[in-house]
Image (cartoon, rainbow, N blue to C red):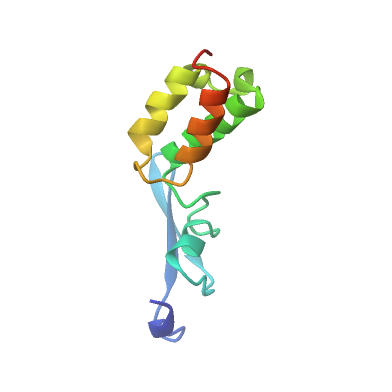
Length: 111
């Protein structure tokens, strides 16, 4: 899309649900490069190039691996809860899996 965007005829809009209504805001055009950069740009507002649910599960898993699981939402405090959510929201080839598997295997399978 980037090489074909013409600022004279094209516009970029951000849609957001606010108070039960959809807000349409024009956003200044700025090339972002590849799809990964678009996903983590201000337009999408993601910290990672994954779904919001996957990002939430990974943040919880990272906290668990640091020993900070008590900071997680109640449904993502134990290893098995986090693992089930990661299975639900991540592809089997996601690059996060090796870190999670190695970390949780070295710490045992408990919570």
